[in-house]
Amino acid sequence: MQKGIALTVALLLLASTAGAQESQRRFTLEGRGGFNLPTFDISDAVDGGPSFGAGLGLEVAPKIWLLGDVDLGFHSGADLGGGVEGPDVKVYHYIAKLGYAVVPQGESPWSVILNAGGGAMTFDVDGGASNTYPAINVGAKIAYRLSPRVSFLLSPQGDIAFADEDEIGTNNAWVWPFTAGVRIGL
Image 1 (cartoon, rainbow, N blue to C red):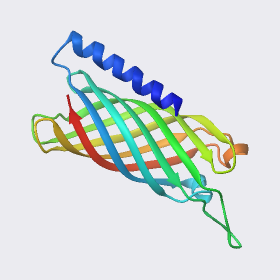
Image 2 (image 1 turned 45 degrees about the vertical axis):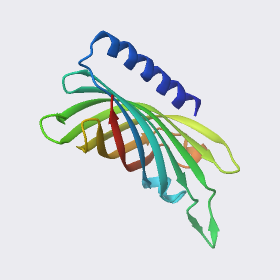
Image 3 (image 1 turned 120 degrees about the vertical axis):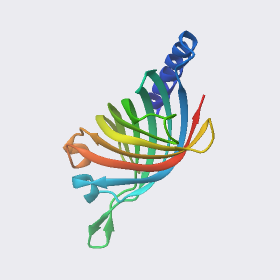
Image 4 (image 1 turned 90 degrees about the horizontal axis):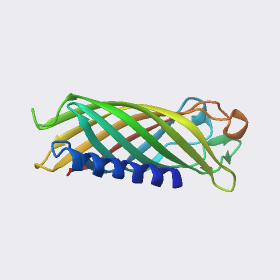
């Protein structure tokens, strides 16, 4: 959680510095909620669950965005057989991304930014250990402008943590945050 807060603060500082240098650059804030879907080996240990997240964006050049997202997914333990369920797990995602606006906002009410990046994911096992691993990300930010500063947002993302198999049962944990929310442009 501390890494996510540090990333958020760093992006805010970068955004405020860059915004002071060039007023043409755009800065955005996001609030999202949705569903985290685990796939492949990690889905043997946990089920999908609700997700909440926040994000920051800074347009650093025409069509180029610097993005930062923090997401929290709540996963109940999967059925391990014989009436036994695994422990609940909270998965924290801290991802910095570079985005390219294939449909820039302003040309239409729609905006589509494709993104890729890296960061970390923390797996906090109920009654067990909390482990953080490096992670990569690909996804999109699809927005529909409701007013000059407010957009409805869909954010399908794919995050892959490079984990220790001895700690969480797989060496690559694929968790997909599919969220919707609001983007506010500043």
